[in-house]
Image 1 (cartoon, rainbow, N blue to C red):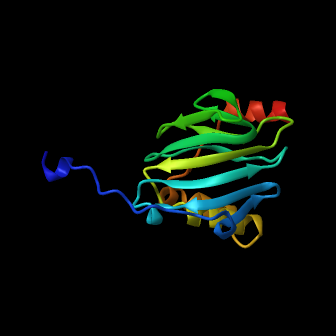
Image 2 (image 1 turned 180 degrees about the vertical axis):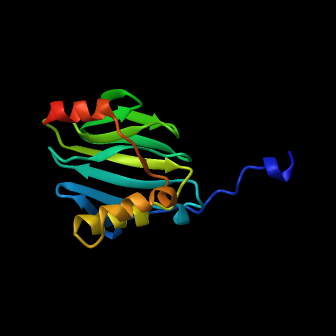
Length: 170
């Protein structure tokens, strides 16, 4: 096996204590707990915990060109757009969304939801979540989110299926 085929050296163990994690809000009732960004994982992954109160909007339809996004529902029920399908995930359900696949998520009607969200390979996303928090507090504009799409590999799309699902949930 030549050096190009050698597995990468394992990263050092990473521990994030709950009390030390940064918690942001991108909308009323929606919290993002920052756990590990690519700079602390050697680029292997980025992860956060999404806590969504009943009735919150969640994430609009979007896709990533470079990363697979994983969802593990920790509690409640999460409605997720995957391509043109809308699925309801319940506690302990797992979903992997490959690059290029439009997706969105929000708590299912009548439920709150908590999910562990992981991106691999890792990409520096914590600044994106900080931007969402600033927009929610009126300190930044939605235009800044649009302008950041390439930097954070977060490309918004229109989804009639997601719009219809969210209207039915309201």
